[in-house]
Length: 295
Image (cartoon, rainbow, N blue to C red; front, top):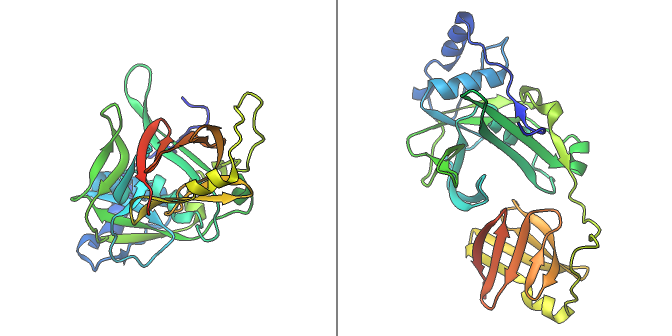
């Protein structure tokens, strides 16, 4: 097992707990959209959500925003570093709590997280998690109250990894109205004290990295917007004599260092950018995505 991976607390469903969970869910599916479901008192919220996502044909989505009546497709990177446009949800009861309670107002940097299955010796599998925030942000305690939305599963399909295996990420390419929602807070997240911090300050270039001088006017020609469509764009700027890359969605931000003619690398992400006559190719986590330059 990855030494940084986390395992969920055991979920023990006795008769009393099951009765309480079923009563709490009650008639939520036929209530008004976005009705608030109150988990039963006395048991962790994550246990209720973990039961619910297994017992009902629903998925979960965590958000800081508590007044969403309809979700619409948006661009995002999936767990395999593929850019896709859709509505994102999960069949896991813990993962969405992270997105609900991380306060995105004023947050700078990336959120690094994952939920996946791992085979265990002798057969079977176990679910693992990883959660990490920008270290400087983590020191500030960037937590808030949020909402976990309960979505109908019908229009969603699981995302498949490069080995043909389904992930805990699901995607819908059409608008989705939530069935109900659950209000949550930081103490509802069982891994609150185990969230790690990652350093996103610009590192000192290692001696073994190639050093390439690029004329300022050549850098200026690379500045601009590169887009798959108006909603999914990469913005290249020049700051203090260096190129910087940021996604319009806010999901990606890094500095770029010249390594060869037209080839730039990030030193804090597994990311490379190759500029060409008509655009750039983003190499992220071993996957290439072309972005045409916007005139």
